[in-house]
Length: 88
Image 1 (cartoon, helix red, strand yellow):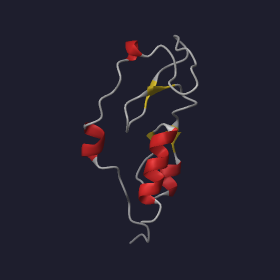
Image 2 (cartoon, one colour; image 1 turned 90 degrees about the horizontal axis):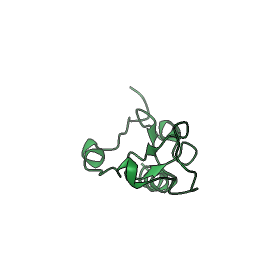
Image 3 (cartoon, one colour; image 1 turned 120 degrees about the vertical axis):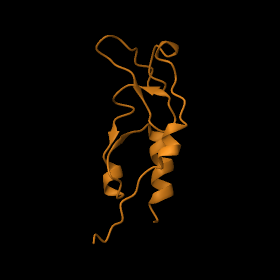
């Protein structure tokens, strides 16, 4: 048995996220990079807002916290999750 219990963001937390419509966001909400055919939009899996890949990468730090997989999260949501699970 592993000394670290596996953690997950509850499915109902992610299922209830309302994603922004792609067409409503012409640029990254954090750095204002314009989206093009080669600069793609990425939705934060927790808040549903749209960012560029640099501002919303798959967060492997979640693996270090004992999660089963990395999730694409914006910095704000990552901080909330780190606070929530860091002391468990």
